[in-house]
Image (cartoon, rainbow, N blue to C red; front, top):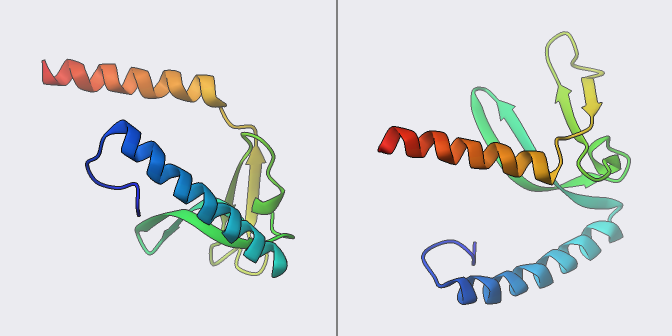
Length: 111
């Protein structure tokens, strides 16, 4: 929350350091409860929600390494045992290239 809004790059970086301190504290608190912090996304009833979330250390999300991705499908058919799909992510270089291509495509519409 402290990094939202208009500010100079220097002010953003200063505020980001405070977020780092908060994150370290959150990780310690979660660990004491047998949990960890993971960046997750959820689609439920047509609404998307993305953000940091506490998850049990035994959850599939907690076991991800590096750029791995995980999708869990919980449906009427897979209610008791959700369908889990796990695999490698694109990584930073491929993702950055995709974002740059998107920016160029959007710029083309604006010109």
